[in-house]
Length: 509
Picture 1 (cartoon, rainbow, N blue to C red):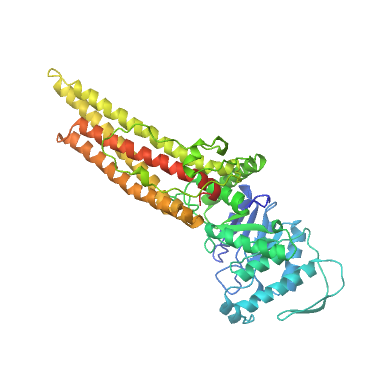
Picture 2: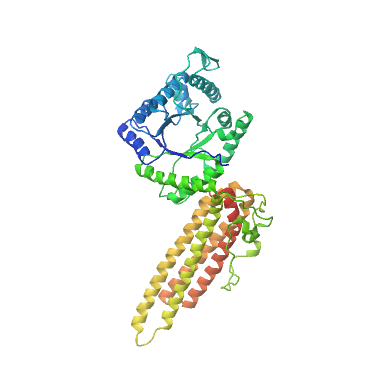
């Protein structure tokens, strides 16, 4: 579900006490590259970390535009009345640049060791609910003295104020059902971290927040969905493990499908921060385009094998070749399982359709390169036929060069196919299995076929080596490439036929 919130991007910096200048410089860089928010963890019992509110005040004083927040404030060691006035004061000084990330206090023993209350997990959640009520009352200018008698906080006639410069949002770090319910009832935002709540868990957790919001008479869209994220721009696939375009695709998907709208990068690397700013621009553009041009792409009721015949779906899988090249057939196409039937009432946004189209585009690249391999084989064949006695040495050198060119290309191509399959096996397929159990037989079959294709690629390598050392022939190499042609093209078509719609419906990761 896309809740329609404006996108926000920021950083989650380590407030290391031994490098205060660097921390402040990274916060300034966050603003300089065009991001919206800088945040710091709050662990008052940890002397290796700077005090969060002191640091936020300094950062706010040395920046002009960017918002600042705790990620998240440790409530047990920060009395709600004092915390509310600290937030309001800094918000007034900065002209409305402060938000409040708030937590129940997960390190219970550390809190107690530093003079805080020794609470159970359940008690700390009750205390959080009471604190939220107190904080909001402090920020409310009218109503007389604040009187709230709770199990953990009692306020008897406390004066109100100051009132913040803007409506400060309270964002809760929450993971368990009770805390998620509190978020839905009372909070302005939900702030989990990807290390504790992976992308595949967000839908179920969002559902609990939505249900609690509705029970409390709230619109679920009132709760902003934030996400602390981490990743690598030099990764090899998986969630946020790859170049900028992968990040853009995945974060756009989370925005449109799960409703996440604030992404906060946990990194102290300035290069990561700069690249994340480029990601932010790409996600904004993609989400804006998807929100601006939703289309009705309902399809007729049909078995999944008929997807390619549904013009309304908007993404057309490539059919397998009508004629087989090889006399050897390694894939029994008649026993391939199919996925769930298409839902004729479902509609898809242009962004959702991009996932299936991207799969086809990748496959088309593999198909084009397979044709180049075949062309190179024929060049070698032509060179062989041109050998003559008078120019035997030159023709031999040409053959070697042709063989070397073909060998280098085949090595590169085989690696490309293998890498593509490895990414699917490690990341995409597990996601599809979890998201839709009806896809499990299809995914299992696709992975089995990956192994078969690997063996066929090995056969091409062996035929090439045999051609070079003289133990094989160009016809043997042709036969190996014919088998690769039949096997790979059949597999790619089957995969597209079964996955283009699930990719649109379930997303990539």
